[in-house]
Each structure stands twice: as structure tokens, then as C-alpha cells.
Amino acid sequence: MASAAKKITSQQQFYVNDEYLDDPESGSPGTSVSVSGDVPTNRQLDHSLAKALPQKPTSDGDTLYTRPEPMVVDTRPRSRTEHHRSGSNAEGLQTMHHTQRHLSPYALPHGNVLTSHFYDTAALPLKDRTEAVLFRHYIQKIAVCLDCCDPLKHFELVVPERASTCHTLLNAILAIAARHLSHTTDFDPLASNRYHNECLKYLIPMMNHSSAIADENLFAATIILRMLEEMDGSLTGQDNYSHLLGIHTFANAGDQYMIPGSLSAASFWVGLRQEIYIAILTQQCVKLNLDDIIVDRSLEPADDYTWSNRAIILLADILNSCFGDTPLTIQRWTALNEAVESWTRARPPSFNPFFYREGTGSGAFPEIWHGSSCHILGIQHHLLAQLFLVQFDPSIPRVGTNRRAAMQKMTQQIEVLMRELCGLGISNQWTPPAMFTACIGIAMFGDHFGEGSEQRALADFLKKTETAHARPTALIQQQLMKAWGWKDAGD
Image (tube, rainbow, N blue to C red):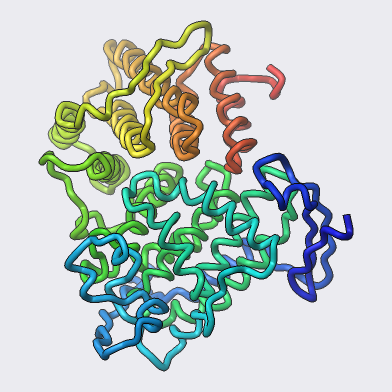
């Protein structure tokens, strides 16, 4: 075992057996941890980031995260190396050529703290084999969760390339890969904190500079770190939102920083999905700008990825109506319901499954097979939109003889939609976000199920997601068991 040891720093070591380093997909790594010195927890690190974000007081004593002033783009001539390091290429805005999509439309200003998170020389190829395992794990297992609605696969193709010269991105990649492996295998649970700390060492100082919002590398790193936070969450809304606040800073900065087809645009869509999940769990409005230039609510012909993002935006609109300060009126509910039905009628036939079979047996979900993750995520968000409209239907009587029948009808509708939502997840486990998204629905609507067999199927779904995909669900399992009247987990 000692021969397989890989020293990471003089303060911390973690060990991975050679068999896993040769092929991480062949099984779980055997690990041993030897740590001297203090390794801060992710919660401590995220608290430091939250304090670093620019704030201003509001009239009610709360704080809002300020929108930095737009930066002046540096248009001085640059060498190819400088362009690669900064992610700048103004000419690339006019075309979507394969090589140009790897370049950001904005340059970073010289001579300030923003340049400090770039390496003087390329960090790739990595010299440490354990770090190479983490890097590969990110590309093969993590990026697919972020790119499910991105035809250009920025987090798989662009982010690793940028990480070659960007401290912040590289450490974010290593941090999330280490966290995912520590949740799903025997990988050292402290390794992620070390990389997270290194990432924040650069990220925190830069968040105090208004020019930082022009750096799409930082935006992408914040998205990755938010996903790491989700792995340490609980699906109850009692989460650490430090990196989500950072996402607000980038996503709400203005249209001039959001170019279609860029890494910033890809980060916006991932950040919106992350924000939607938190809005659902905390029963609050979506705090991102939903009128950005890249947002499309039309029903005009478009590619399938655009149709999926339209469904996601529609869900955000519905959440804002359900959880907003103004009560949801019948008129507004009807308009939103018509938008949901219009999406269903107008969506391309490619969103139809290539195999469908009703669930057989007690508590079984239907089999619904799709070949594209963007179809699955689009339909699942569309189902969530329908679920919230059913739950918040203002036409349901609050009192009176008709209320009981209306509530029974609502429960039946929710059960039908939930079975399809979970069927999409369990039938398409090859794309982990299908499982995550279904878990959000279970957390919100699982208490409607009264049959023991269906309750057990939902509980098993949550357990499978935690075991296979590093998303903690134990607390929501306990809450559902209590809502179902189970005496203990063995019922």
C-alpha cells in the first residue's frame, strides 16, 4: 500500500491503491488518510466566500449582492498565448467555428488581482497521477451532469482546456471530483477540502473586483463549486448557499456579458437549474434574471436544446408565481397552464420516448427510454411545472362540500405526474441529472402517496440516488417516513 501513496502537500497526504489509479471505473479505491494540520471544512470555506461577496444594505436591514459596474473591454492587441489565458477573442463572437467556441468574448484587464489566477506555464499534463485520476473523473462523470442541455458541451470540452492555465478552474475540477469519489467510493474525504481551499484562495479576492464578472472562467468555477455544495446538501432547503450567491453575481451582471454559445451562457443555464432546485426546496422565488438576452420563451422552431431550456424557463416563471408576494390568481394560473400545454403541443417529436411501458407490479414506475439527456431534463422540468400548477391551483375550494373531491383529484393528478417523473429518472440512470431532478419532485410531492408499495419505491429511489450519484437524501427520507406514518426505516 505504501508504494501507492501519492503525497499532495507537506501538510496532507491521501492514498489510493494502484489498481484504482490504473482504471478508476473498475471498482472502489482502497484509501487511507494521514493528515497533519488543520484542513478547513467546505462549510467554513464557503462562509469565507459569502463574506467576500460585495454587499449593500437594504431598507429592511437585509443585504443585497451588488451588481458590479460594467467593465471596459481591453481591446489592445494580444498574443495567441494571452488570448488563451484570458479567454478573449472578439472576432469569435461572429461565428461558432469549432475552435472559436473555446474562447471567451471578453478580455481581462492587465495588472490587477484577476491575472493572478492564471498559471505562467500550462498546468497540463498533470504531474501527479492521483490528480490525473481526479481530472479524468471530472471529464467522464461530472461534466455530463453540467452539459445535459448544452450542445457544445462546454464543461466537458472547454473547461478542462481552460483549466490548463487557470488556477481557479483546475482546483474546482479537482475539488468536485474528489468530493464525488469520497461519497461514492473509499476515496479520501479530506482531499476535496484541500482543493476547495486552494480554489477559494484565488476566488475570494477576485470577487471584490467589479471586473471579475467579465471572466467566464470564474463563472464556470463557481458553477462547479455550487455543484459541490449540492453534494453536501440534504434536499431539505437547509443548505449552504455561498456559491449560489456567487452565481447571482455573474448571472445578473447584464446582457453584455452573456453571449449565446459562450461558456458564460452555458454557465447561466446550469446556474438557473441550480437556482430552480433551491427555489423549490426553500419555497422562494427564483433570484436570477429571467429576461436575459439568451432567454427564449417563444414557440418558434428551434433545436432540441432550446426547447429544453424553454421548459426550464417556464418552470422558473411558474415558481415565481407560486412563491411570489402576489397571490396566484385564476387568470394568471390559466395563462401559465396554457403555456405548459402549448409547449407540449409544439415541442418536436424527438421528445417522444423510443420505448414506453407502463409499470408492472405494485409500486413500479413506467419505463420511459430516451436517447438524449436534453430531452429527459426538458420533460422532467415540464412535469415539475405541471406539478406546481396542480398543487397551487387557485380554483380549488378552500372550504365547503366540494373541497374534499377537489383535493382527491389533485392528489391523483400529482401521483400520475410523479410516476412519470420518477420513471424518467429510473429508466435513464445513464444521465445522473435525471435522478437528481426526480428526487426534487419526491422531496416536494412524495407525501401525497398513500400506498405502502409506492412509498417504498420512492424511498428506494432516494437511496439509490445517494449511493450511486453522491446526492445526500437521508434527511428527506426521514421526513417522508414521518409524513407517511412509518414507525421506523424498516417499515
